[in-house]
Image 1 (cartoon, helix red, strand yellow):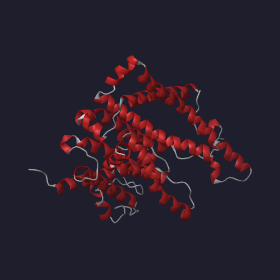
Image 2: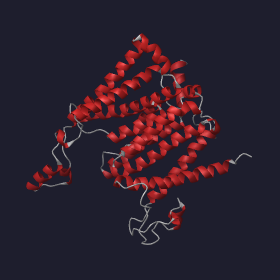
Image 3: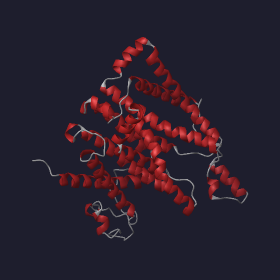
Image 4: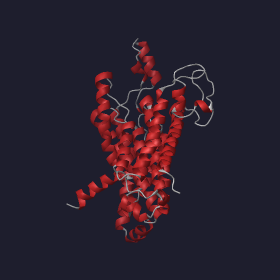
Length: 396
């Protein structure tokens, strides 16, 4: 007998809320460099361990009246909001993918659709945690991005063994490389290795390090104290931002050069071209290289804006956390959709930016949450985007 839909919905929503409870642990502990496993959850006010019946997602926060059972310290509404948001995202994506015509043409659950849902929900859950941390601390933990990137690589590599490769390629359900994009991905990986080697031997310098030209924090504080002008701003090192952007360009050059070189070899060297055309289309190879290329494209589009913005305005534009965040997204959704997500994100950020400028006089905004929203939109509108592109370029 088939399981009633409402049981599926209740289970998926409850699972999402439980994952949201864990995401709250990530949001609280990761910026503080604490283990995500031990010790057990405890009240930050009195240190009492939280019992299992006081740690039920959504319910406990409401039953306890938003306060610790023991010391009555207020429990942040963030806990409730993240649990609720996670449950709604889990349920919403499930309905969209398997019960609605709005989402992408994923296969039924038992025909491999579970893999698409699993990869996408892991990405969204991780991005909820990263966005919450970015909103509070103005930083995106790179470990979250690396985790999602690894999941994207593995999921794309095995995808061809779970879903027929013809469906993956036709409907763009997972990243999949052609011979050309596969060669670009291989070259980019080699170039990245060369760039890190140049960093190690010192031919290329890391950007935004005090040794590169910014005065050390302690030195600037001492000079400010001597002049009686110590301010909060004096605690930050000063940089020539355009020079730092040029350092990043130097780091990226080997990636660009080797990527272009690998593409040329795969097209112009006959013996390599014939072998590569066959080898690159094995499902595991095409999936993995497609995910790797999506990662580089996701990183590249944000890094290009960061460098151009820094060169143009003389201030650091966007953060490297945003670069890694979109790289992780590209590893899961592929190069096309990660680029579209990047250009959708400003529409979400505009309202927040205007509010901050007029009411809080802050011109900078944490951009991670809006990038995450852009990724969510391209997931939901996957088929609509593909149909629009086909009509625009192939049916004119």
